[in-house]
Length: 491
View (cartoon, rainbow, N blue to C red):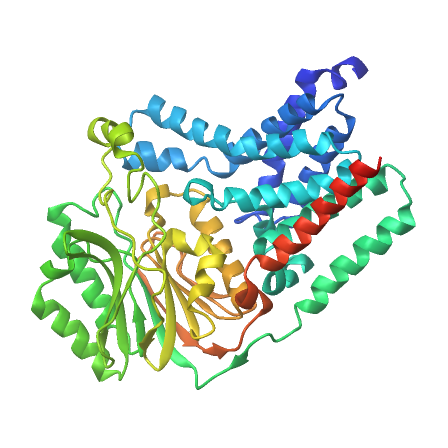
């Protein structure tokens, strides 16, 4: 048995199991200590590894367990709704998970080369998550800071350092636990660990922003249009009828429809249909936001448009999904869409980064569409002007998986980072009202047609994160790396 524990194969399997365990910290499970324990187990394996190469393979194995368990739903979008053959969808999903696993691989290799592994490992983990958040347009999904949102005391640091700062503290907690388990100066370890967690709990009590104006009545609409029917011409009139009924059934001042709720070009929306929706919004002395595809100057945009009492405005999605909304290196990958996939809207144009909040229903609303709310550093472009955040999504692409729950947790982090309420209107879930503390105040059941009504309070002011973005995290991480380099040179 002892020989088995010390075998390379067993340790690789153990690392993969620790990666899968770490996913339990994320929604819908919210067992945030499991992510810390999973990372701690990996750091211990790195500490015991004989060489950097072995630590690298352990990191890669952890990554495979982590990402395959965490984003398996990519397969659903490619196969169930994209029409890709099962083997090709499985292979593509595995390749994405393998690519993402290169980041913990690199963290393990570099950490093992340091004489202060349990200091370098948290720094490198968080920095490489930041790199993962922008390289090749970025995929920061499952950054471990999200696992602490909103219940962990460490979530109190989100308004200060953003999600990557919380990732650093999460990994640092894991490293300190390994030191404690090793019997290394336990009083010192506790003197670092306890203030960190107590500080996070105290930061949760800080009102970084203050209310402005009176609350506004809101209605978030969930049409529950099946993804495999959404873009079929025969389903169009039924979709229009569902949303018209939902709109007229609410008296809210701010009504929000999901991303591409009306599955057509904006100029093809019947004029009398829009006039009816606009008249209803005006009768409530408010406004309505609806998702549609805009076509202008030979370019297509994934947009949210406003109608109602305020002048008409629009927001165009800025951060597009590679391979979902545009095709990188089209000459190389275009055949995949021609021969294997059936995904609409794969040739969109991005909107500008200088777009301002929509002034509707007495609020200044920072709109972000679907995947955009994964990028906290981009959400703050519309702050501090914005008083409310609105995310519109269509996670029906991922079926009855954990994807929509994870996406909701990401929106909760954005609310905490900015000190603003986040309103989510989605096609099939999670449609929710989130307060500025990241708590879900109300939510519709998934895969049900309905209206989520409530009140939203606008806020003004700036959190440290909305003012400085990731710069504080990068300053701390860079200082830590400089210390490691100095220490290595000194030795």
